[in-house]
Image (cartoon, rainbow, N blue to C red):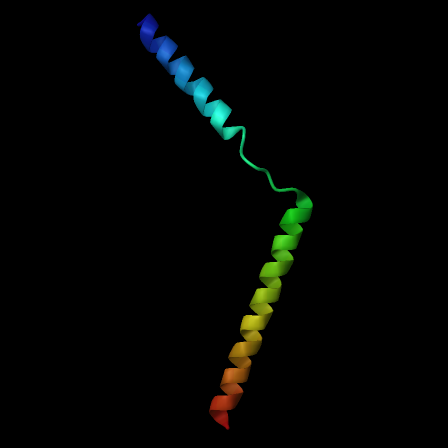
Length: 57
């Protein structure tokens, strides 16, 4: 029983050490990503409109 407890504590500690090292995005990075995504969406919509206009002519 004692060995099982030690094993659980060791695995839990290992998981905390590996997950705490993840790179966290700052607010500025999140905003920049959102702006990039919005710009990509606008470009895709413009391409779709252009294709629709070309098909109707």
